[in-house]
Amino acid sequence: MHEFSLISSVIDSLENYAAEQGWKKINKVTLRIGAMRQVIPATMQFAFKTACDGTLLEGAELELVDVPIIVCCPRCGHSWGEEHMGMICPYCGCDDAQMSQGMELEIDSVEVEDDGEEKD
Amino acid sequence: MMARRKIDIQQAVMAADLGYAAKIRSFLNERGILMVNLIGSPGSGKTTLLEHTLKGLDLKCAVIEGDVATDRDALRIQATGTPSVQINTNGGCHLEANWIDSTLEKLPLDNLDLIFIENVGNLVCPAEFDLGEDYKVAISSLPEGSDKPLKYPLLFSEAGAVVLTKVDLKPYIDFDELLYWDDVTRLNPHGRRLRVSSVTGEGMQFWLKLLYDWCDEKKRRVQAQ
Image (cartoon, rainbow over all chains, first blue to last red; front, side):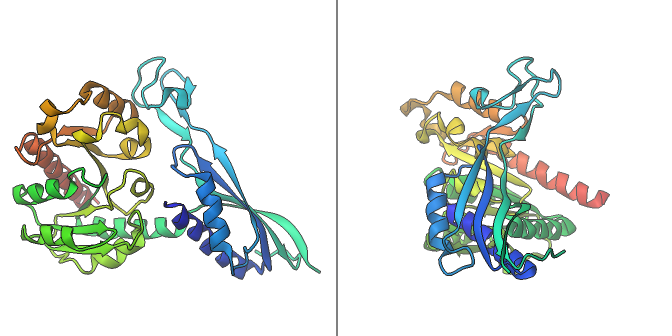
């Protein structure tokens, strides 16, 4: 149920941006969510719909982009995903594998309405 | 004239909370205080392990207790003579760094060696939130079953140590311990692995030794700065 916390962080951040940048309305928010993050998409959508009421984001669309897990072996160069869940290389046994993606929890982009002037 | 446009943000969702976590980390680094974040299911034995740990450790400790409701755990900790502060989340499933930040000042920070955070009982959400700790510790008990690591991979892969509690119940429970440790190792090859019973004291010396080692390592790191 941490989805409500995540969505309220997203709204706080974007309201700050909007105040700085002069956005009048935010029509769409795109988040990138790694598969390691235990986020339930339907709960995110529900939290977003509920928490956006009365903000610049009211009625906005939420797009969730899933980022699959990729783990890479620094020794043999192989990579794998969730089918081999784990940090030990299934090809050479190296235990120093690194997750190159799958931990994302990012605001990727927004679609906004403003007066059309670029601001720094 | 209103214009519609797409703007790249590429910022962490939890940027504000990560800021608090970084602030806490640097505050504790300056003072050489270790912070350990205990995460496990309700009933996994976190508070009991903590009570026995506090009685066994010859270190200056304090405890931040996170619970949805009541101050029962904080009272249990205070009975050991250790200062503790209760945070009630009132329904929230995890602790967040901004709450830890405002709670630290309620602890007697002078000459403190170690702060334990006992997170809200939950294997999912607390794993997502950086509280500025040095280590997360995953606590799971034998009666919960041997399939927990792969079902909750984030916690078990991030933990500095995985502690299997209630091992004294092994004769009574069908628990595939080989599978359990095999899955923990797959997720977290370098994490420390411990099996303890707070009731019989089995394995407690290794857990206490790990905490002393982590404290020493932290003090050495601070002196080297």
